[in-house]
Length: 543
Image (cartoon, rainbow, N blue to C red; front, side, top):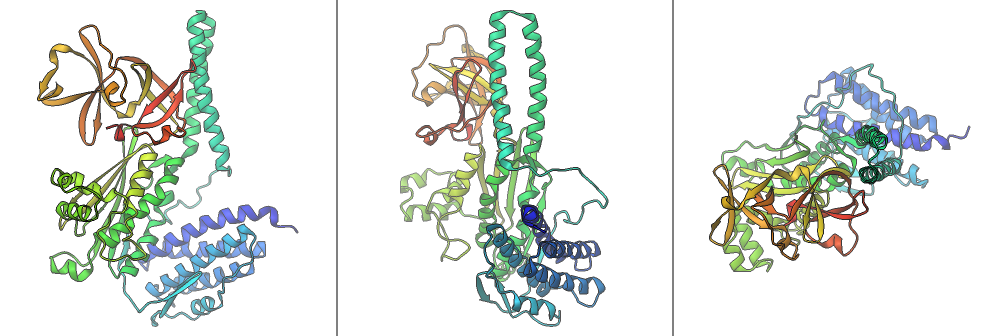
């Protein structure tokens, strides 16, 4: 029987099982007697073995079988689950991943698993594991004790008996679907313009019904694109475990809010930035146990990743209780490396000093390791976050730790915008970035030095001209009122003056090509119903 037609399904399901396997192995270190996790781990290894055997992949089935046998001994109580057992199972997971990749590439497997199979079969918890290898490279490590507590939801928490009718769809099909939906929304606005000119009640009624149906289609399409944040966070406990072991540190890793859903495009773009931040937290942020004890801290460091919703945005916070950052030290390093001028350092606030870590080439590491110290990472993080329409902020206190705060939109495809005129341009501002719109009377505008301001309550809000920011001709506004929308830039409220407001509209974001893609302050473009092209502002980087 030809089983090649089932190969793609085998690869997809095996990778899902591998992600679950890695999560369960790490989670079991929190409570080695958790029977639910033990049984889930056993069943997952059994599933991989069964699928591989049915497909004729003998090496994969053999390794999964030995991992299943080890968990069976744990389940029966003849073997104590300890760090050595976890190391062997994680090593086996790595090898299984490599072999499944070989299946996908239709390449002949080159992994020699005979030694690993023997060590798994003969493992006793009374023995110390002397060597731990990884596919493609080997490294020797001495016996170590690593305290890692995974305090997120247990991966085995799926309700037994729960069934769902699902179908696998290629991501390219989803991308095409969202593009088509976006084009339909653009054409809806075109029909609305035609309807206003025609003055037909029947046409207006049909457009109204079309609008309702498109809104339902949009909601359904976006729900299909939404993925739980756990899609990427589930791999982080394993990452932290390996980093902690490599650096000889004890780490407690906590995750909260992993059930929150984001657009698939944002999820995919967040993986590498978050890995950079977590690696820095372990390598730079947390002190070794002796250093922590010397300053009165617990020997075990803590890293926490929290996700929450705020209106139409998602806030991700990564914080540690490590040594923190000293603004003066950061400024001194940047000055010594020639990244800033001394006079620039003198004028910097602590928040500005923290953002120096995002300059390419900046690093305070004393030596380059395979974890960090090359001066890359945070600059890549900031660029990636900005490309997703988000913003990054850093907070830190010497001796108490650091917080990295990412603010991101829920979706990056179809958004509601406020349209406004600035000289000859029509610009679009994401509604989620607008705190309020006002038409200011000239009498309420005052001066503070050279800065024009108006008051919102007791707060003086500076006024900036959008025309001046983009170098456009200044328009002389007639009448007693000035159109202003209030937004937040770099943590402070700002009022941006425009020539006039044109209304609110739903638009489909299109990426900008060169050279416009290199301009700061632009997040993308869109086409309105009348065919006019508009720029969508990136408020985080406008000024």
